[in-house]
Image 1 (cartoon, rainbow, N blue to C red):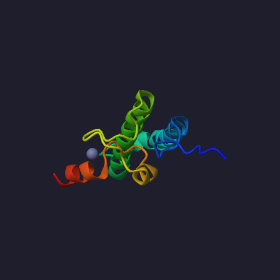
Image 2: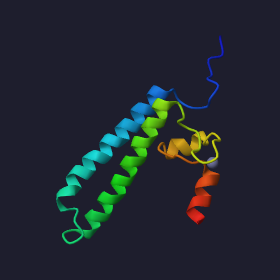
Image 3: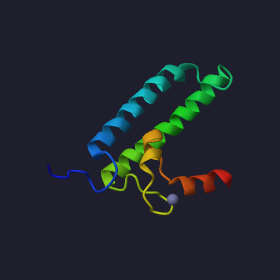
Image 4: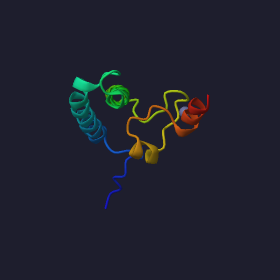
Length: 106
Ligand SMILES: [Zn+2]
């Protein structure tokens, strides 16, 4: 039985892209429903929620661009591979846990 384990410990990029796209569609659907009332004076909670959905949509879009560019899974700051377990939980992650915690602490 040949060993077909890929070198990188990540799913194939087509699988990653389709997962990112499905997360993106989910977010866009929620955002479309929120947007009519997502105004600070009308519904401040919806406004905040819509803003956080927009931020994640941007991250997902960026992640899809990294898949296309072949740099998905690499930290945008130090260039080291991002832990697969981290990408499992946060597929749009653009920084490794070490760099991200330095950003969060800053
Ligand atoms: Zn890093």
